[in-house]
Amino acid sequence: MVVKRLNPDKIWYLPAILKGMGFTLKRFFINLLFKKRRITLNYPEEHYQYGPRFKGNHILTVKKDGNLRCTACIFCATNCPAHCIKITAGESEDPEVEKYPISYEIDMLRCVFCGFCEEACPVDAIRMGPEWQTPGLSGSSFVYDIKHLAYRKGLGKGVLSRVDDKERIKAGL
Ligand code: SF4
Ligand code: SF4
Image (cartoon, rainbow, N blue to C red; front, side, top):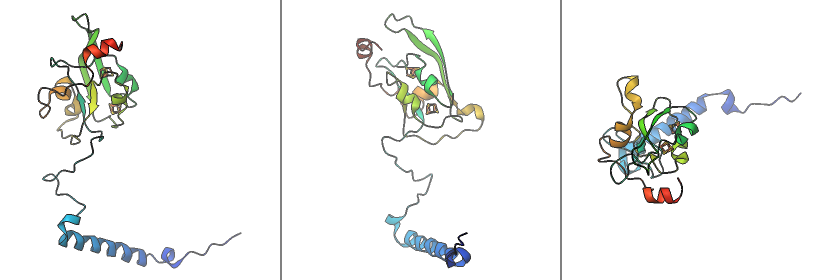
């Protein structure tokens, strides 16, 4: 049997406590004296700017005519590991559009922000944007519908999809 001797750091926890307090004090004086070196922000007055690949709250994109790009193919809902996307598809009167979503809902309290829905979409109809704040007063306010996903305040008349309808039909999507 091998008896392992513990080093003094592990027997006496006081050095570790002092080391931790020293680090806290160091950060305290850096924050106090050098504003530019601060690593904390005064939220909500100051917001952190995440990179363009950040996966925040979802956006349903629109076509040039302002209608939803989504073709209700259900790929995103099928791919979603949290089963938080609910889509009701309807037939479109436009012969070039096979289906469209009558309703599209995402339960944000179940979403794990994995981005699989965005990856699965063949027509750039769903994107994960830079927003991450999700305030709400009740559980139902976290179920985002079409109005919120595509036309909420801050999105204006909607975010234009990169995939044009003509290109989509040409590609057989
Ligand atoms: S980000 Fe992930 S969990 Fe959230 S809706 Fe998309 S696929 Fe589902
Ligand atoms: S994968 Fe894209 S087009 Fe298909 S239902 Fe989802 S958002 Fe709509």
